[in-house]
Length: 217
Image 1 (cartoon, one colour):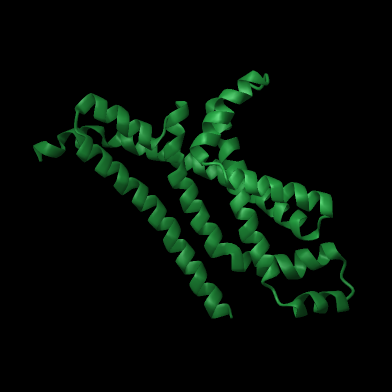
Image 2 (cartoon, one colour):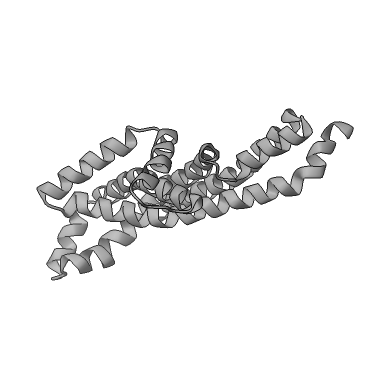
């Protein structure tokens, strides 16, 4: 019991760090999802110029490690006169970065629908907007749900990198406790358990969605 006293005395501080991690990830998921969906739509239905711009964006963002992108934006924004609070700067980077991956998930979901679905909607006289809203999106989003949930779990784990720009969350909270208690094994083990519980809950929900989709088909 004495071995784990540093953890017992600091568990609430780690829970606060986990709460900050969840808040950061949850805040970033919303704009990342909306941006990813818009990119997927533009890539499928846009013109040649817009598709070329989107493909360039996807290759550039997915080709740069998130840690490098965080550091680059953190030091670049002040030089351009944009002084965002660290929290919102990190949310911006996470949103832009994960939107590139989410767009591929949504695009695959849309393109995986049989051509008969599109033809049936056209035969009913639907406009493109009605077709997407009533027929295509409900089915595509249902198919894209499991990989989307997996990306959300990855986003939670990616927040552990933001301590490099000085933002406080679970990983930085763990480091602070270790510096104070000199008990790295106990503290980082607890941090790993917290990350696992969060990501396992998200992954379990993704498995539930997969089963629902299989039953629906």
